[in-house]
Length: 450
Image (cartoon, rainbow, N blue to C red; front, top):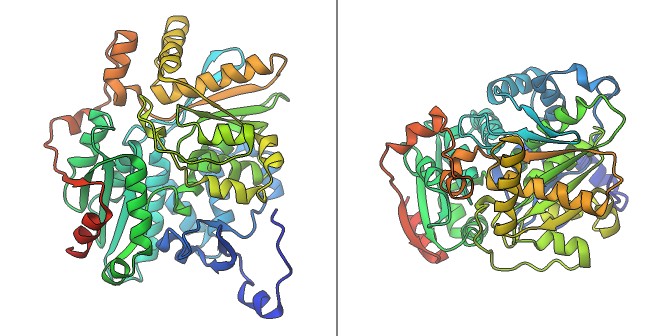
């Protein structure tokens, strides 16, 4: 697992129960409740468990016998067992994860995992719903209102808004980049009202994410508000993102390895997959499939992590120029590039290539990929070009319903994707948002006025 210096007797007593440490300082440790309520460590680090335990032997011997919810409980228990009872974990999972994840075969060795059957039609429903139930559990003992700050490049905001809508004692503030999310995504963010507040930032996702991080480190804001984050910087968002990797890989009956191709922006999704692998689930590896914001694929190639201003693409949820969860990935592998490369390969693709993949798959199979799923499919193709003798079964993650990108689908494929009822309902509502410059002081003043 992790290589750390031996603890002193005082530290052994202090750290006698499993805790979470900051990626910026392994000696800064907190319990689960603190990690979830803080979101970001005071030193700007992200929280990781001090030890990633294996699933019980009985589970690892026959994981395919468990349902998605049953395996989700076992995965959750590895992280939550010192804060909740098993029955409380079961209640959270059963309430939060109550939708299916169909695996669709495209060709002999390539399948698509549909993660968009939750209430907001995006994979972020796993994290948003699970986190909202966990926070409600922790807040029963809190008397102060909690303000959740979340930056979104598209789907995170709607999933969080849905998960926390009308929850007493919780205010949600969603920051999104103006004119850089799809119309349906914006409608999902800005039409709920009640305890959900949308801020339209005249900048990029990175500006929104920086606002959130700065707010957690700002003394005046922290004295005024009780805040946490619902972005993937919060460990509670990543735990449930391990569920679908564990369950899907567990269904593999052949001896051929499973390789997941993950459309990657802030790298929380891929980190969830690493949690499942380190818990003992048999996963052959991961493809980090990126759009033109290919910071991590370039790092895997040259060993240099070089953040940049994010580039706007048609796969907007991946438009991240400085992915936060890269810090977690490095820590999971003790910052050893060769170990990371044993499990992860990375590729970046242009919008043109993404459109061509959407066309190809539709013409060959009549399956409609959204732009993010198309990037994942491209990752599989690229891997097979470089490794033509691979015997793996590849699973590309479809992270959002294509109707959320209806204009792009129509432009590329010439068809109108079917719009699920849960998306139709938001289209007739009026948008309500606060327009704001990419200026942290303006955001700070907004928060201090609450």
